[in-house]
Amino acid sequence: MTKPEIAAKSPFAVNVEKGKDYYWCSCGKSKSQPFCDGSHKGSEFAPVKYTADDSKAVYFCGCKHSANGALCDGSHKSL
Image (cartoon, rainbow, N blue to C red):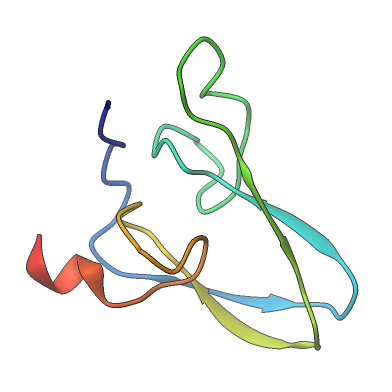
């Protein structure tokens, strides 16, 4: 399995809106981090849909190694 590129060694804080869908970049190549811009095309990666359950600040994974999907789980600390 191909490993994603590390876009950042810290999470991206984003204020999300309740009920809105966000598409997190899983490959690390997007120029619109932490969101997908289609840079994954032709690879085994695909964007990950995140639907905001509330309007609040969330922390999207920047290192692309989170076991928590689109959201940071602290994996960047061990890279």
